[in-house]
Image (cartoon, rainbow, N blue to C red; front, top):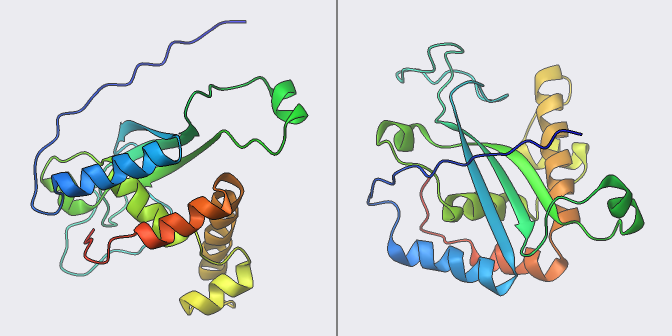
Length: 187
């Protein structure tokens, strides 16, 4: 069995008005309190997101025409845990040690050459952590048309992701994330 070494390159941060030291401290305190870590891998723009049509008046991606920022692979994990063998995970199914997902930054961040931070990830997850976990409830809550295949699939993806968040975060963590979400945050 070959072991692959994964290299994560630290990307330089560019300060913007949207993110303050208080915001970064807020995210760090949340991660410390609940013994979580966030790993962020920059993936460039090799893949376009599976949502959102082009926005009139904004120049979109050169490939898909949609408006989106840079692509990242984000992993939320419990501190002190590492990837375990499948046999170990089957023995302890209640222990969700990690959650990985694709994440796209904003167009504004991409234009400012700003990389996402743990604050950006937590602010986004805080919006979804208590969202609908059922496809039909997601359709109703988001005002989507269940007769449209694209909108039905979008609602299904949203419900599946919310289910993953529910399995990863304990009820106490979900409540704290709901309370934590800054009202003034502007993505």
